Length: 549
Image (cartoon, rainbow, N blue to C red; front, side, top):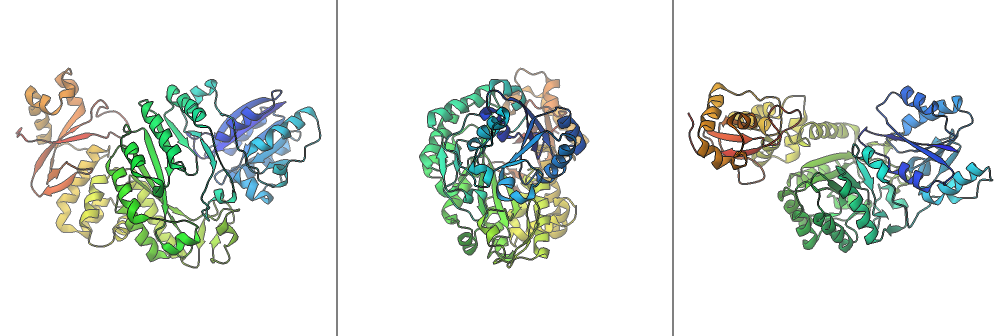
């Protein structure tokens, strides 16, 4: 029996973990073919590719990001492949089964509990067993197979790879589907280490651990973190989600000792409103964890991704501003301003009438109104979210925005509100809002464009002359750039720039800050990336203490 395991991802670089589990748990007599597509591809291209493969069974995991595509694709496939059996699983069929009348079978909950028996019966022409997962009762599995094989590595090297060391969550957040599960399970530590070595040895670029709360329990998480540090492979990054309240001093020390780039961490603050936290079945120790977060961010070896959710019960527009100000005060590398999704199966979905929620009746079920927030306010937050994604989260204006935050007299939210209006550059907005600092804004914008790969990289004739004068003095070159000792002058020239700033920069901290309003020259070193290489160049910067003109 030929089975098509079909993944429809949100982006090309993503992979579908469920497909690999389906393959590993299918009966031996089945021929499984995995195919991954994405929602941005023309549906008919996906249709023709699947229809031409002549599968006996087609299995598709369905999520909020691909349900619309699945709803168009599968009914069309059923008309031209009438003998093919369609099996759908995942969160959407589990908690919104009525949306899939076109499926032959829906599997609720963990597939390992139902899939092998269902497919085995279909392959052997037997009666379908009476399985809870086929009757809408979600199943939970205490142990699951390692989903990947050596033969997958070539494909995985070009994808974001998912892996889990645990299932379930000890917390019961009212907006999260994990709250619908009452169990947690953890793989044995020796097995986890062996499987992590699989990714390390293969040098998979990014491995995302989908454990709901990676650092629960704390001691287990610390052992895994220490193992990954000990077996560090350059070019391999592990992404996981942390709960701040569980980061103790030992865990923090481990994290900030990690090689740069080994870890990316995501921290869901969501809100700092006490009523909203209680209603969402969460708790926060912000005053304690704020300093933990600050140390983690200031270490600069880990990319930090923080989350806020707009629309939670009892948090109005002004309260959300206060939550935003508190989180932005520590200036994380990335801040995701999310909007509450009323996911079927969650506590807040069940209580939507009580909270006055109006939400999309289709995925992603986003709230557009509630007792505490109205559409006009959410529209403003959408604009700020757009600015975060377009500018702040890309890191291309980090020194400019840091200086603006440091001198802005109002709330940080009010600053971002101004920056989010229209399509002007942040420097243009700041020149209008604080005109006395116009020269500084323009200088910082130009500096950021050189450091982080912006487009405004005009070099003045006198700056070009300064580079050539600098390169003729071999002693000064070695003082600043000893790592170029063996390179000829023409090669060093490709990797550096000298620009003039309208301020004296302080280079001692995480950001380039303004020490004084007087002219200064800085040397920007692009190391081995080269000035002409496509993509963003993150550079090193040195204040030149010598005059070259």
